[in-house]
Image (cartoon, rainbow, N blue to C red; front, side):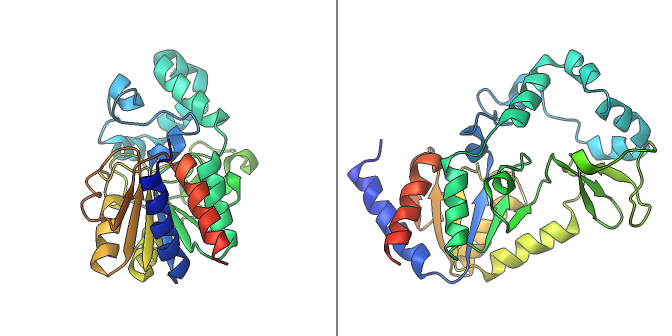
Length: 265
């Protein structure tokens, strides 16, 4: 329900975003949940149900990449071992962008959004139409070279050898999704840090504020004097430092925020 108080907060946020020069959106699992993708943690989260991945996942991959790829190329085996994971994978594959995603597309087209830093791997921002997206945890629709960081659409990449080799440098290819124990790809991390340091306003959208390094970005932006607006149904550890906190779903609030900004010309 959009109360009068929420409308006032939207007006305040719209004015601040409209007047900002460099706006960054930090997006978490809450936005994807509004597209039907279960969260990882919390009630109903996939890891709550089946347990968190092995913290040595990346090490295990590096120790035996061939085994990992054999499992990757045999999804029926993985689905049989974990029906809950199969449901999660199906939800990812079938998810569509929601009104919150499309609102960010409009904000980018209006020249009012520089960069989206997303913690989600579903690729929905790109599918919706955003161009300036930094996927700090990777994108499930891509493969990535561990040596040169080249990325390839899964549907367009031909696998000949297992593990496959990068056509650009012959490095080893893995899924673009960042595993437990795997460093954030340096090119993406550098882009996120630069965007955070340069922003004078940040939208914090549907993130729990507990997963680092992304959870540190709002605090860093705040310390640099940026205006911070958080849109989330519940308070988070970030709520204490934000300038404006709007309680609600991103799919409900963002379209109203963008409409207000559009009216300002």
